[in-house]
Image 1: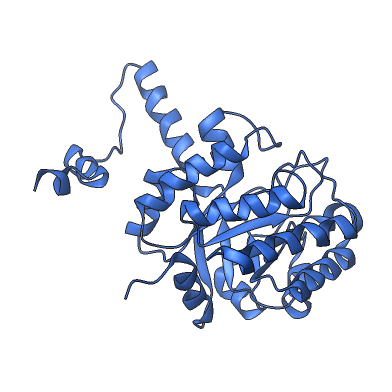
Image 2 (image 1 turned 30 degrees about the vertical axis):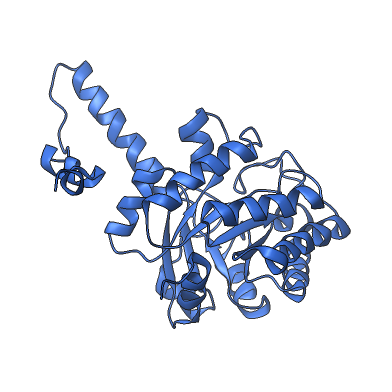
Length: 279
């Protein structure tokens, strides 16, 4: 019997060890992640805003645009996909609609956070969070949507570390756990000691977000597992690698040279499905 994306994610979380989770930005990057053998991916708002709009992750991309991108991503792979749903795009009613829409699109899990809209990338300056009451109401609405009609998990994120301190961020994560969320995410701790506190004090399952050049130290997955994390997310790595490869190819052309390091045409045809189409 076929299992849902949410059930496949529940099964992954029940297994021992840490899940290394490269993040995707479109259907092709998601397919590459699956073909490389990774069991889980995440549709990051930063990279979707960058690739779809060439715009920063500052609340400029809409619910409809994220949903449209997510529908294509979920359809392209069989591994579960977590979807970045930002603040839920409005009040508690909007949050419920967002979670329901993400479930219908095929996501295994929706991330809802406590930033003040318009939100921004968690490793940039200028973030603000809503007060405790508004944060709890937002997460409660997401949990209610899950429980009422949506086969989807809820990942609750707090950005309170940046403006209110780690104690407040841990308090919020615990409060979100009390509401019944499935995965917890304290964004942008700034040291290994802070990661250790999160691993010791925040209920499991816990996710760490690892941004090259960001605020959080890039601990190895084995170290993150040892201090209590279940998911290691890499939100920008593939976008950064792709952008650098395209810059290098364009630079070669500008210099009158042929780009190097390209996929063979046969491999590219196979990647996008010509072989299956032609048989």
